[in-house]
Length: 379
Image (cartoon, rainbow, N blue to C red; front, side, top):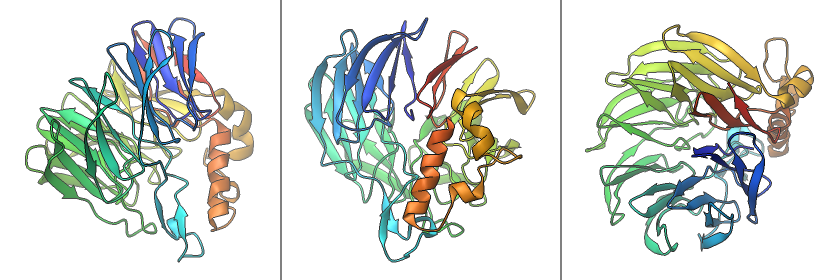
């Protein structure tokens, strides 16, 4: 389960790699209904006006009635696919174009003013009528769009694997500006923006595979500041809370809190594992998941980890897959430098019970999914 849960009133909506969107009771986790698509769901749902919206690897965007789980409409994109590049992550043969095993998530829908905005592996961003699924407009980027759009003040902000952050008119899809990120020179041919942008205080915050975290003027697209993550990607989407931006990195295994206005680092913690999980802030605590199968709770005032909750999958498989420092055993994650070897490593991470899902906090309870197939509720 890579999808992040959404809490609406007394229900929780969450997608699963088994191809289904689930609605469960918030109080006890019992299933209300199950809607089945024709492909894995690694996007997160949005809910508006009695409809739940989700995208699937089958290439469709679905609208499902929240009361019954019945399909209201489906919109077919030109097809989903993963990001590809020659010799991805240094795999051999270097000249062969390969799908990226670490392009895990699909774009999640954002609903604003009766319109569903969503990206696709067909390189486009779509604007659809929420009530009917009719196409309002479509915008073409230069590569896969698997980040999720942010909408603010009549503008849609979206990143693409073509390295660009785009600002588009929400009503027409007309481009207002684009901001181009760089190349990651420390890890083979890593480019693009899988992270979803966050908008706050007239700025857009987004991480990328160029090993940097970017803050951009929301109106003009000019850079305000940038942080060098020393080769660590930012796959997760940032959280902005009371003038501070929080985000984890992947390979760099860091969790950072930086001043939103200046980019000055407020604290920088070491992670025991990579993180693709976007943080949630509540009650002076930041919650996020890591690939070793833990939900982490970081105190904002304490600037340290207050608690860690371990998934059942991690408890069962951790001793076999993790070393004494809590890191994945290298011979299991990277048995060789071929694409097949990387796929084995990805399956290893999925077996562990990693927390790739982003947590949501409601009523003093933290909800999150895990690759062990469970949806958790933790106090």
